Length: 146
Ligand SMILES: NC(=O)c1ccc[n+]([C@@H]2O[C@H](COP(=O)([O-])OP(=O)(O)OC[C@H]3O[C@@H](n4cnc5c(N)ncnc54)[C@H](OP(=O)(O)O)[C@@H]3O)[C@@H](O)[C@H]2O)c1
Image (tube, rainbow, N blue to C red; front, side, top):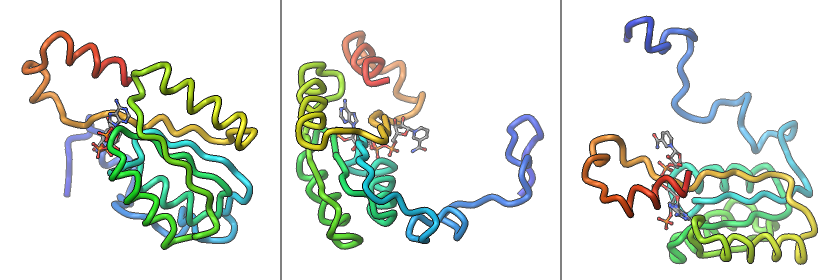
């Protein structure tokens, strides 16, 4: 499909919409043994997908954060199906709550001793169509996540 030049969509001749062999985390040359990875917003969507690919790349620890505990459980189950040697740590929290974030940071420091990767993914992709329906408070909360 042709798009206008200014959108940049034709910049590359090949458009991928899924994992392709060169970036497949399960390939041995992309493994990350021993790494500790924290992914915010890992209950569903892109964050969950990132968590699953880190599981496939054989990291040691994955720290999952999002507000909905049941979705963190689902991500953990999916991780275990891919690689049951990964240690999963789950934190149901709101990333705009600094004391909850501080609790996770202390836990990681004390229990794991390091953090190799932080994927700061939590957020929303509801789009501009809802922008004008946000009240001041909701907008501030939304900006806080960014
Ligand atoms: N999908 C796209 O096309 C697209 C495009 C550009 C950018 N992005 C960005 O990519 C990120 C992920 O998007 P997505 O499509 O995967 O979204 P999604 O499916 O709605 O998932 C968002 C994740 O973030 C968590 N989350 C949201 N607010 C949170 C908060 N205050 N504290 C803790 N966790 C929170 C959600 O869980 P809870 O609600 O349970 O907390 C959920 O696990 C977002 O930052 C989004 O803006 C997405």
